[in-house]
Amino acid sequence: MTYEEAVEETFGLFHWLLLVVCGWANASDAVEILCVSFLLPTARCDLLLSSTDGGLLTASIFLMMVGGYMWGYLADQKGRCKVLVVSLTVNGLFGGLASFAPWFWLFLLMRFISGIVGGSIPVIFSYFSEFMPRVRRGAMISALATFWMAGNILAALAWLVIPKTWAHFSLGTLDFQSWRLFVVLCSVPSITSAIIFKLFMPESPKFLMEGLVPIKKIFKSPLRSRSITLTIIFYSISFYYGLWMWFPELFARAEDGGSPCANVSRPSALHNESCYPVKTAYMEGFVIAVSNLPGNIFTILVMDSTGGKALLGSLLLSSLSVFLIYVVQTKAQSLVLSCVFSGVSVIAWNALDVVGTELYPTQLSSALGFFTGVGRVAAITGNLVFGKLVDANCAVPVLLVSALLLAGGLVGLLLPQTRQTELT
Picture 1 (cartoon, rainbow, N blue to C red):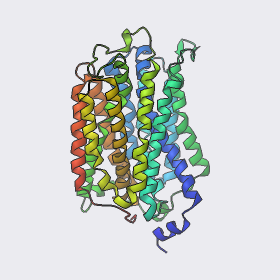
Picture 2 (spheres, rainbow, N blue to C red):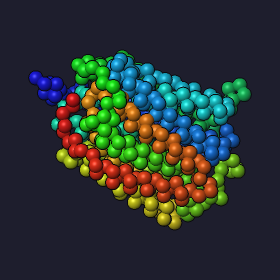
Picture 3 (cartoon, rainbow, N blue to C red):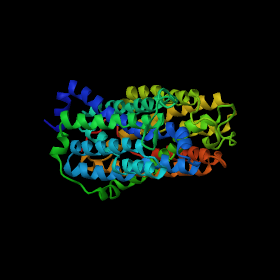
Picture 4 (cartoon, rainbow, N blue to C red):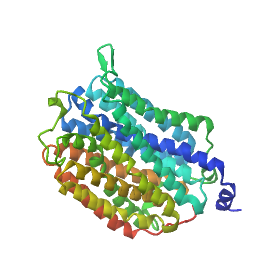
């Protein structure tokens, strides 16, 4: 029997349990990244932050770019499961410790460490895919990617915690407010995932059969052209995190009606009487998170039949929806288009997860870590650009997101088809 034949013969309950375990770890990454966007309006008031400070804070978690490559490299040498335990533990630990930081610089440092030492998502996808048979891999990886939506929804439940002004107490000189409690809760998925992997999960059988391949091989023939193409796509699609992380703030600015970019007269929560945005500002984030569901279901159903390359075309629709967010004039229209953007862009992300896994040998899980790192650079850039321009002219970064998504969709046409390819 070949490896693929053996995996197909053994497919069963374990693989569905594996989906849940790896999915929960994937959700933990979404929670850690997106929680900052939901706590930002309140934390800005409590820590006396400018918009530039907010941009630095939202950018800090994306320093997983270093962790993504580092953990991918170590996973190729030491094993997937061991690396997942360590990276998830550190990510959750420092993410939780950030809640006790009384000053912005210390809070930023804790998030920085959480980001730079975290970044285990490429390893999760490599680990998961190595258990999956060829004919089911596309749908199962798409199902795994769906758990990002679950993490997004969990983070969007900030409206159940942050507006509760009674949920605070004093720790010495530290006023432990409700947004700090939310930060602690957001570290729970990472910590629990680490415990589950440590106690119950086996090492990848594919890893145990293979040797290490140098990461530089991805930029040598015959992998060079696909690697350059994926670098461009990952950068293009990840820059939009600048827009995504600022959605709650933009919706808070549009609370009185009108386009989020039009209401630049509300640049900071520092001048508000209350540090707590009304619940609708958080509810809108929750609605956007749920709007991922149709796109996730669609990719699960069609991925194995169409392949990831075809679905990357959804980047073109994502570009159009972002452009229209800039054009619309009412808050309701902005919300509808944001939901459309969320539902369409998730198709491209799920396709990229599948394509990025199938285009390279399993000994090169650090390749996906490298491309994730490229995406984190784009995410950091996007957040810094939004932090600098959100008060002065937020139309510029919004239109830049639209242009990059368009470029990514066109470049995606250059990738080879990977539908139901055998892992090498």
